[in-house]
Image (cartoon, rainbow, N blue to C red; front, side, top):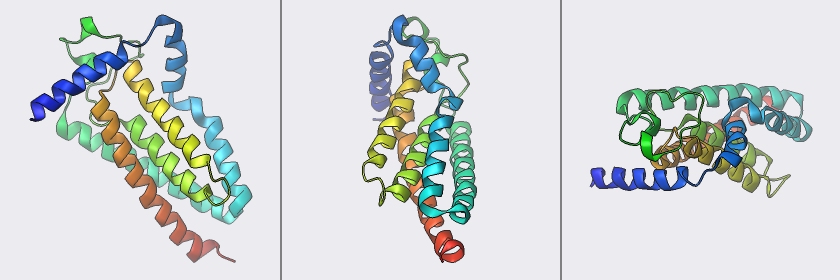
Length: 189
């Protein structure tokens, strides 16, 4: 059964990856780059500051740093444990896929980009939901776009993305709860 699931995963990867064209390659390379969304993160921090104040912002910065470190490190543990090669590292796929990323990396299960972007989306979306009702949907869409970029450039399978999303959503919710606790304890007036 697992073998069949991985076969379907490979077929879906090849379908989604081959939707790409050279016309759009540069856009997807920009989207997949880690620093592309720094301005968005800065805007989110500004919105958090505007709605919660400086003391709360400092708490958020520490919690977000811990959250990203947590998701990143757990992602690495999974990659080293499962040792699932990235599609760009599979000799049998190289002639059937588009690989446009700068580098391939060794293992891909599960996607750090997906888990980090989903954790940030859930965390910020939940904190700001009382003030900006639809922001969480924009952030979730952004996370999906970042995740698809990993398939587009040829470095992750769809299951890598799906598992990254799941872990990221759970992490974002957990750290949202931690932030709420710390706000009540240290930043309430």
